[in-house]
Length: 323
Image 1 (cartoon, rainbow, N blue to C red):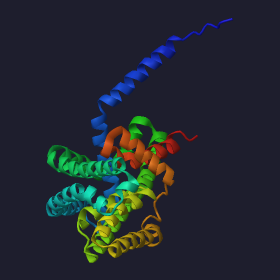
Image 2: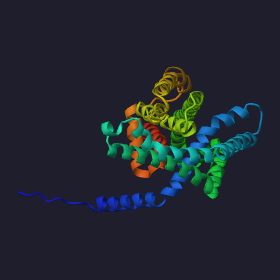
Image 3: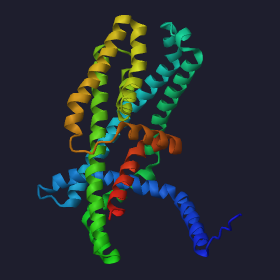
Image 4: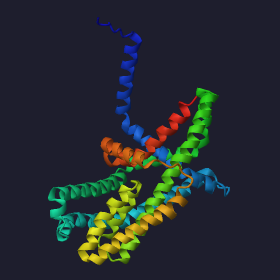
């Protein structure tokens, strides 16, 4: 005997409103991304601003000093290294198939695998370069993010106080707890991860320069960026460098492999424990899964924001859904 399923008017209205809400979120996704990046910049810079404020400097002056230092460093970095990175990256990608062929790996690996690896290497380098150029070419968006982050840093405490008059003390307590945890966990992870990526990139670059390996700058950049991917990232970043080394001499290829091994041992046993000791640990499986989902949804931007989004959702669930 078939059962009759009845759907109430409330269920229909809720479903329609939920669909409209999802559509609205999708429609304003660029605004949400813009605001989220501004919030991330705020929590990264806030400890440095608080540190300068301890010297009796007005908060606005502390923020201005941090901003001028950061902007000057980024302009120097981009103007000095971007042309060299583009030039060396394009040469490395164009030569990569012949480098593999010189090692006699084509029959072992197969043309299709080599072509696919080269394509992904090219896409990755292109994505990094495009992101760098788009970030600095779209001046209006960059300025808007910096201005919004500036006011968020300036009014950090007023944000909590303003909630009290609108939503009540309980919501103020929860939002204050969320912001404190967000700044501690996500801010600690972001600052620590950026410092780890920078350290691994610099150490790799110095080692490759000492060994006189060509294309040392893009290879070191690749090692620094892939540091965010646990276990798999360091292995993937070592492959192109080892191939370049073996094309010069087998002994040099072995030395390059040893270099990457030493850098990873330093990262695992010296740098990471010191740098990340105050940040929240994340399961490597969660990291890889988040990065994969981020890549699928939004490409290179999704990879950059995958872990921050995951940590934000995790903290929000703990604060707002806990009884």
